[in-house]
Length: 379
Ligand code: ATP
Image (cartoon, rainbow, N blue to C red):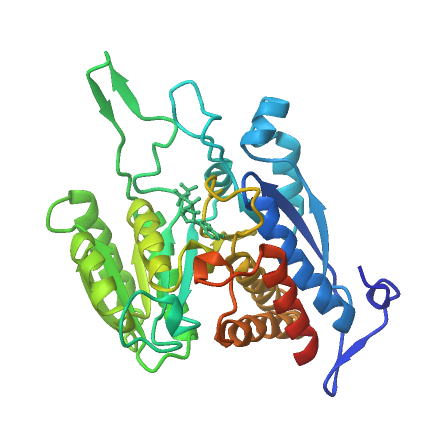
């Protein structure tokens, strides 16, 4: 990458002299389209670095279903250790349909990583960049602008890899909701709402409190946390109704907080409102570190064809830089994050631009390059 930073030279954005802190980023490209989209997101960072100096030092580690085939472990200890040492983690996607555990379930090392690193806050922003991307009528740029805060380490995923099967007759996975786990996720949601500069600050609690004790408990804790945020509007929806409201009135939401599995499902639904899985970034955030990855999976149906949409991953890198900038009080990196988002926003507004999932004809590389070129122009 760029030598100015390596030489310790300050660079300028506008009038402002900036320090050149370089962040260690563990990169887990994974399987399927994971490597294809991660490569484009790294291209974006390298483009930026040519203009403003080095920001990231990327260190690649093996991980995923192919890694299991090669090394017998989808998440080797050395990879986990590399992630612990890094300041942030950039992840593609993991899992291959044919590579499974003996019980028939797919490898999900990206979910294991959340548990291992206690990444409790799953942040899933959903933003409409172009009205042509949505199947909904009468939606303009920015009309859909919400964040799903998915509790990431308990809920229905708590028993992942540890459910019970009895004598081939009964199988049980448990919904686990703890007070401390819910408190910190809901608090994160309220904090997020206060920082988003929306005209209406609102946190919607999505649950099934009318049926399940665990969900009534989740709502009670939401109410307790909400007392500390009187300036934020409280809102409630049952998960089934929420699937309806998201399609009917997605513009009515700011931050949505929910348990792990509901958040998983709502994230895919929400991505479908703004152009599909390729348009949805995400961050899995803990106290000590965070993983940034697109919301999508390995997309085996299009893997290897060079047509995956890299925008979700590029936006995930922007989220990563913003998080690093805020964590280390580094305005240069926060500014870099904003530049990437602006470049994506402006390229997505151009008519006819996009990979096939957006109705365009660009390849993954062509779209990545177009965003990189535009970024160079606006820096
Ligand atoms: P997982 O179970 O790992 O979360 P998933 O079941 O949600 O994965 P995906 O791999 O995300 O499945 O794919 C769902 C659909 O979205 C597929 O049709 C896939 O081709 C499409 N898709 C996913 N990511 C992209 C992308 N980056 N660009 C274009 N299409 C994508």
